[in-house]
Length: 603
Image (cartoon, rainbow, N blue to C red; front, top):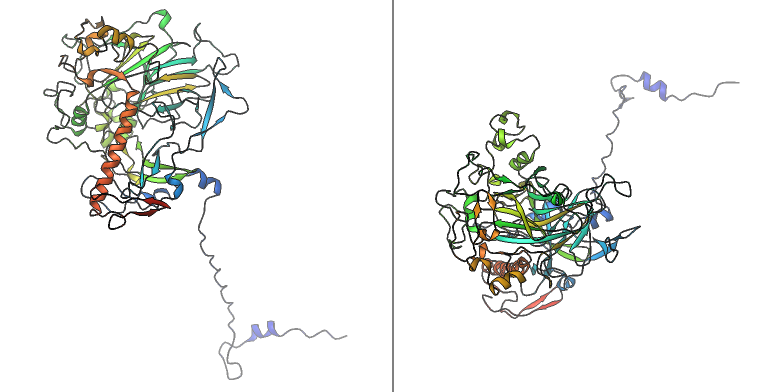
């Protein structure tokens, strides 16, 4: 049987002539053709998952941070945002709080339960959030102004807390079941003398520290003090250079994660061999009694913060401070007067309204840690031997710390405030001074991140020292800012507004009564000698800036400041728009389904 015919294609492909001919005009090439390039797929836009979009209050990142138009004069930025919805005009919703699972967190007495706030925009590193509401009376501000949900008093801030913190419904008691976490209050100290108290509900037992807890885990602890906005929330108070804290165990001071001792300030008129070129004279350490070696459950600790005036503060951060001339605390000088070279103390707030979880927030690019401050807080930085350790600082030459912090430091973030101090009281009795010469906070000492598109050098009105508490492994602490019905638990005698102060002077502030007291040899005979005395050691008469008061009074002041600056921003934008009112002839209009009434020209 004959074989089947084979195909001729392999034969022709191997015997095809090189040159074409009339009989073979299209001779195929012997070299195989290159394979066609792969078909390029159209680049698909990457979209986040629904869960990620809901958890991000600003899904467009830093694109929204681009302002519509720059200005040559200090003015807030206006961003391109969509018009408000009808729901944006509703009053702010109450915060949602859920119980801890599977076992609720309760007070040691079992009477109150602590809850976790959810569905709110939390302050994270680089971003800060505050409630906003749409108002038809602010058309030039894109209809948004500041607001706040209840409760309306000085309290712990849910947005300015770590996500693991739990609170009571009045936002005055907090705890945490994990490692060190921190929460700041909704009020801040910027100048003058302010005071607040804390009470330990779960911490060091009244009998003293225990080696192991009953559950076999770590023992609960708390820390407290004052912290700035740059201080991280996932660390205790006193962790870095942006906070000053007090520990419950051993009752020590804590700054830059370095413990210290309480001291009594020395007499400024006396000479001390330990005086350095930039630092204060050698203080006298406080020897604590055996019963005061720890902050135990039930103890009431008062923290008093003394700051100079914002006028003197502005001179320091502007670089025009002269210690030979500026010998006071700045409260005797008019607040409207500034030395030549000092920056203008305008309040500029670059905020953008964003929607999140049914609420509207103002998003602000928050302050971040500067490089000199990171070197200052580093464990390897020894402030007493900076000259010999310059070569060991692993940083650029512009960020090297050549001298300890002082009012005329080359880095604005390491300039200190003369006359500033933090004093601590236990059950109404002065323990001693914890810190002196606190670091300045006004810009440029505090600055946001340039890489995120923020502008530097502006004060938004909430730059200062916030009361802060930290909890560790179930520690429970309660704060008292003095604006409640009962006032403070154990106030010092000189605190204005306390029953003891009113009884001693018929309601007159202690600084107006000319009360005595002296500082002799570094030992304080009575705190009355510090009343009304400025940084020069002299009394210049009564001045509200030198009178100690509860920091809870700052809440009403901050509300008034927000209202004023919202109006100022509205007038500023009104003038930038040429004095044009929405609706043309002032007849009003409609925004987001909400009727806008006509405005009077010029507001």
